[in-house]
Length: 108
Image 1 (cartoon, rainbow, N blue to C red):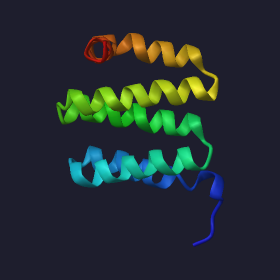
Image 2 (cartoon, rainbow, N blue to C red):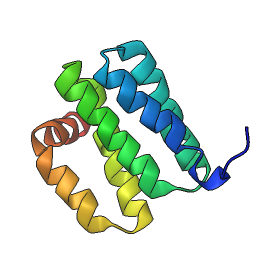
Image 3 (tube, helix red, strand yellow):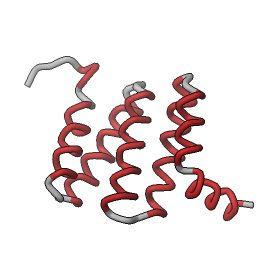
Image 4 (cartoon, rainbow, N blue to C red):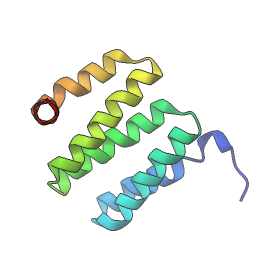
């Protein structure tokens, strides 16, 4: 298949969203992780951030897995910050402060 390599990482992300909507949690998990990895390795920090954020939301709201969601929210905040969007990183940290503060408490 031919296509633009600059948007190839969108394929697993969109398929992950579709799998999540269909309740296919194993497929969604695998695809979200692939999308995050592919975007990050390709230098698309903002897309790695978005995929990490969406995966975190899926883990939190659909799979009720706060521990793993926390990890992906932290990753998303870092990706957003690395991309230069400290504001979005801060919004994410505020939105999920109840999870992220718990993580900080565990580290200290």
